[in-house]
Amino acid sequence: MENIFNCNLVELQKIKNRAGNLSVVENSNSIPFDIARVYYIYDVPGGSDRGGHAHKDLEQYVIAVSGAFDIQLDDGKNKKTVRLDRPFLALHIKKGIWRETRNFTSGAICMVIASHKYDYQDYIHDYEDFLKFRRNE
Image 1 (cartoon, rainbow, N blue to C red):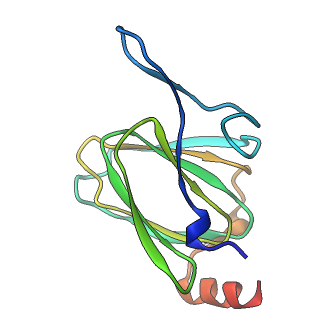
Image 2 (image 1 turned 135 degrees about the horizontal axis):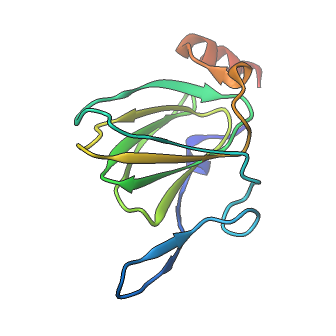
């Protein structure tokens, strides 16, 4: 069973250039799963939060492409908050971890790289259901 201590910041490859930096994410090289889906969240009002949920099987890399935000991780016993504010850092969120995204700065862009395509059945939206899932895992 995964816990929040298995969810870590990963420094992505950073190629420096006078014209600007470039970071790379590649299947089975810089990321430990095959990329099935990429999406991004933007135009979130400054200081706002996004609702919490967990995934039964999906893993994610979450990157603050622009601006900053906090992600609170919860494994049912422990909690920790990670601030994402640099585009060359990714937070690897393992399956079975509750997450809430908070404190978006104005203009922040949150990019999510996922191990699976969208599947509503993989989501746990209710915190009490999440705790039951964790007990039965």
